[in-house]
Length: 552
Image: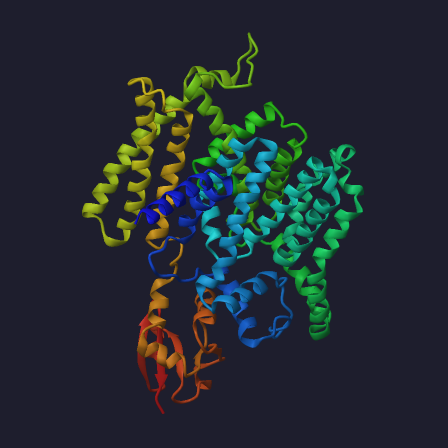
């Protein structure tokens, strides 16, 4: 018994030694956010289900090069990755999402390393923690799309470029990794990888006299080696489809660059990022202002130039969608760490560090310090938290079942925001001097973590189509779908891609109902059922669709 006690004490000591390590602490921080679910998962239509179903087509057919009837308009990297996870862990929506989850974890670590080189360890760890609780970033970290893996490759390339300057002895190794990451990005995200490459030009060109990246042949070698998988795929695809393989890739890019299906204007990313990275985008704007005033030696054109150029590129690009901006979110986190740390210094010492104010000149930063912005923010968000607590309790008491889920999230974040005024009052009115800026900054991180953890726990980050999936899993329905093909004449695209993933036998499209054989099963719109002239029986109804069987 004494031996067991000593063993437990030894294990506890080891845990205490390992916990402060940045990689471990960041993993512990994000892992629950990636894994919390309601116990059920279902894919989001349209993009997520598209990637998962196309990977399933490769997995089922065993043809990983040309499984399509016609040449495909995207490079196959995302499908290969997801199909590989199907082979390892079985075909499921959870397996489809694992690549993005793993890429998200590695992205946090890479952001920490980038931040450590530019801003120091303290701000680097804070930036990685902030990135974890940015809503859009976490959402796409749990979807089977190629966005987060592409961001990881871009971040790895940026880190490698920094490492070539920090460690000249290993210059060629890091140069190769930088080029290889960008080249491999083409396989993962096709021509979209060129947007972040172009955003690196200010750093690559204007700082060339110092780092000499553009005359480093190993950088280009790595880039072309990274392109080899894409070139092999294009060669094999060309042998099967001919010139259509190249035409489809180029036509898709031209189409994206000339159409705006969602009618989003040039200011779309501005308000969308402010909303989906709240409150970090506002801290990021403050951090950007601070960084512009006091440039980061050697890396200003990466830290500031890269995201600003990329933001302009995305805004000028005709097709504007929220997930296209994901590459900006790590930099929002880096800027937010600068801004939040600066506010923390005012909280703790009353003046911002390393920012000398010029006498006789109006200075926005000095005004912030004099007005005690941290105190005002603490009271403001605390007061808003009280109102949100009251509203959430009201909804939980009298609201419907659907809205109660959102009230639970509101209650979690509002109770977290009460930390801010409690910490402030305890330090400055009750003399609790141990409540340093770390506690105040934690008062911003914890509410967002709690809200996102609650969002995941009730299934809002993992269970996007529960009604359809549960219908298909009913024993009576599943037994039919596993042994009989189904047909449809017309069906909306989002439902079709979900069927492509969840149906054991691929549903077949026909031109008219008369082409469906007797005793066969078909999907029709519910309002079409009374209009059918052919005798049939209704097997089940889900949303606006019915599964029917035609009777001879």
